[in-house]
Length: 259
Image 1 (tube, helix red, strand yellow):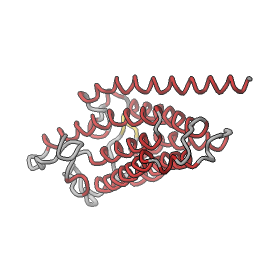
Image 2 (cartoon, helix red, strand yellow):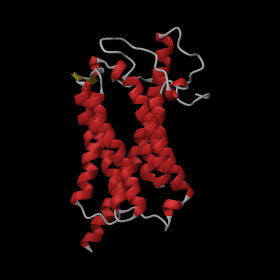
Image 3 (cartoon, helix red, strand yellow):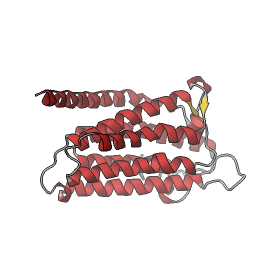
Image 4 (cartoon, helix red, strand yellow):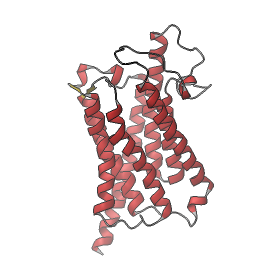
C-alpha cells in the first residue's frame, strides 16, 4: 500500500510538472518580441560571461546524466518494452551529441551570460527527469505500437530533424576559415531556405518525438522547444537582414517558403 501511495504521488507530481511546463511555454511566447540573452544577443546585465564551451557542456550535461541515473539506479518497470526503449534512445541520442560532442566542436563562440546558463541547467534537470521518469516507469503503449503510423511518422521526423540539426551546426562551425573573425551568411543545406536551419531541425526532432511518444510530457517539451527556438529564428532572421545588404530576400526565418 505504501508503494502504491508513493507511485500515485510521483504520477501526480509528473502531471503538475507538465502543467508547469505549459505555463512556462505560454510565458515564453513573449520571447517572440525579445531577444534571448546569449550568443550575439548576450548582455552583461544578465550576469557575468561564462565560456561558451564550458557553458554548453555543463548546462546540457544534466539532460543526459539525470536520465542515466534514473535508468541505472531506480527500478524501471517499463524499460523492457520496445516502444519505451526506442523513445528513450531518441532522447539520449540527442543529448549525447548535445552535451558530450557539440560543446567540444565549438570554435570560439560568444560567452553565455550566467543567468541564461543557470536557467538552462534548471531546464535540463527538470525536463530530463520528466521525460525519462515517465518513459521508464509509467508509459504504456498498445501492442505493436512501433508499427503504428504515428510512431513510424514520428520516428522519421525525429531522425530527419536530428540530421538537419547536426548538419546545420556543422555548417555554422565552418563558416569562418582559421584566423577569420566576424559574421558570415550561412549557405548550404536548409540554410538555403531558412535563416534558422539549426532551430528548424531541433523543432522537427522534438515534434517527431512527441508524435511517436504520444504523451502530454513529450508534447509539452515539443511546444516549449517550438516557442523558444521560433523566437530565436525570427530574431536571427531580422538580424541577418539588417546586417547584410546582400542577404537572400527569398530566405524565410523558420519554415521554408512560408515564414
